[in-house]
Structure formats: structure tokens, C-alpha cells
Length: 132
Image 1 (cartoon, one colour):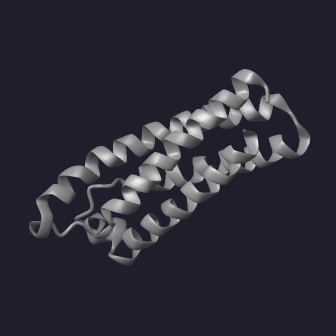
Image 2 (cartoon, helix red, strand yellow):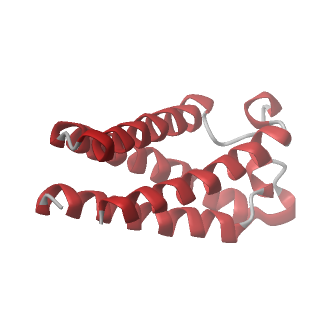
């Protein structure tokens, strides 16, 4: 289960990197029209990366404390992700009338990232609770 969580976490990160690259390439925080606060977007990225590194270290050294810290970080990452989703939805619904850079992020990528993130969170939680 722990390795499955790692695989999902990496796939989730790939989707996140894609969305971040689209957002930045369209002007991102410099555009002045983005509804995504840069500290939230980059905080989401940095905390997710830190949690992933801790998860890899947990797998390498079987240190339960690292797994619990990774889970705690993942919960914070999820909350930041939900806040960005809440800001992205109105931009998506506005369609062509919106000039926000995040409007260019495909719905399928946002949905896939979210589904993978939830699955990752569940697997990390189950791994921690069951100790497997």
C-alpha cells in the first residue's frame, strides 16, 4: 500500500507540475489577473514536494514518524488545493470572458489531479493507520 501511495503521489505531482507550467506560461502571478494567490500555489507545491520526500525516506528507512509527518503535510496540501480549486471553478465557468491565466488549465487535468490526490491521501492514511 505504501508503494502504491508513492506511485499515486508521483502521478499527482506530474499533473500538478503541468498545471503550474500552464499557469506560469500564461503569466501566472505576474499577469495581474490571476485568481490564484502565488503564495498558495507555490506553498502547495513546496509542501507536497516536502511530503513526497518524507514519504520516500519513510519507505527507505521504515521510520513511522516520517510517515505521520508526510500525512500531516499532505492534509495541509489538500486544504491549499481545495482553496485553489474554489478559486479556479468561477474562472472556468466564466469561459471566454475570463482572461485569468488559470483558465487555460484543462478540466481533465484538474479533475485527474484531484482524484489522484484524494486516492494518495487515502492510501497514505491507511498505510499509517494499519502500519503496512
